[in-house]
Length: 80
Image 1 (cartoon, helix red, strand yellow):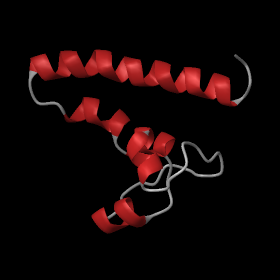
Image 2 (cartoon, rainbow, N blue to C red):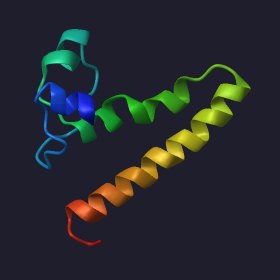
Image 3 (cartoon, helix red, strand yellow):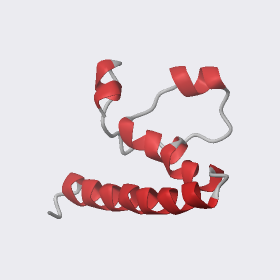
């Protein structure tokens, strides 16, 4: 979140959709938000782990990210 703010990206833009199959240049320079970073990178990390220990750790962290997004959207949509 802090890095997105530092480079002038919004926390969230409901009109944006996650970008797929980007080049590194597109990833770095395209229009995005801190929340889109979850979908474009962070939520994909769990499936990239190679060892059993890393997979186990990634599972709990992935769950934490999903809960964070649920809470964020509830607050964004004024449901909490």
